[in-house]
Length: 477
Image (cartoon, rainbow, N blue to C red; front, side, top):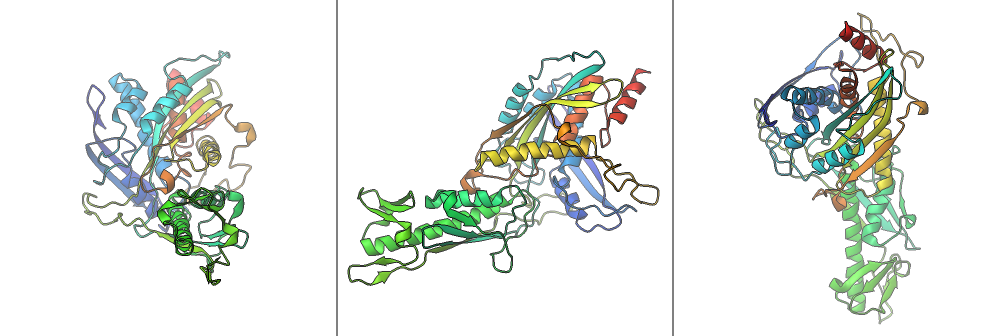
């Protein structure tokens, strides 16, 4: 990495070697996704990235939450902190100075979408009291702090599409069919909220069917933190189509200009006739009876399709320039206060704060849940999860006695979720994905905080207490 003495990053040469195991399978997609975004959320005018997939005698590597971003950000964010120290600059101010802004050029030549990364850095820094040195009450322990930035784009082909179908029922409620999968992240709830906003229906009156791909409309995949954005756009379009059919019908039968019509409290209302009120349950199935006693309309339905038609995976094979492989980036920042035992290396997370710009939090509680859950999963991979192989590629610890995962007892003392909202122009109500992002900053968070506390730099994963204790012991000799 090259930078001016004033702290402006001028160049980055990044070589990434990925162990994809004995068979590439899906691992090549991880290699590609990481290579496209290896600059991190920073403006770098001169950049060279080579992301290379290698065969080894280990089990095949594939997709996992973060899709390669956790790994390259470990190296990049660790290096950025070291670079700031070399320049005699504050690591947080160094990140602020170089954070990417809307409209700036991405590594492959496209332009950055709206981002609230500077706001995220500010709020996280304030939350961990960056710049204030803290001391442990226990003389055997030291306290370190760190703040890092992160970003991620959905890894998807340019023709990844979503579709949705919506129908009304006799009681004025609605059913939505999608094929996006709810695996606990709350997708079906959010889809009901998106449709409810258009149709003035409470979510209690909207049933989003559990996906069955035999009968539900198509969804590319529920991966890449993209379904709130992609599937949400399809659901919104389906709801808008249903609303338009409602307005067309009311205009035809009641001779009301549809530009004056609006939906409120499960009814059609009219701005020029305040007394006009037509409940959904009175017409969304059986239609509206006209003056001649015939019925007009019939069951109200809507369908919606979304495909990001502006994307392209075609670029110059030598330079990587010219395409638009990523639809957008979700950005953010995270900070930590870490207590480290100098003798044993044991670490305790006293406080962690994470701010993520989700564009628009359609369901803030679900976003906060993603932040807390993502951090815990991330800290698990950093502090505990260690896969050991022998020289023939056989896993030596294939059980939960030797392969450790955290429990509730290992939760940070305090987790502060922070929601930033800088709208995504092409997202449903400005929303963009947030599912994977809350996990990916964990490795550099821990490594940089250990370095701040003890002055030793851990450069490999996981950052176990044994590594920390041995590194500190070696540094003292």
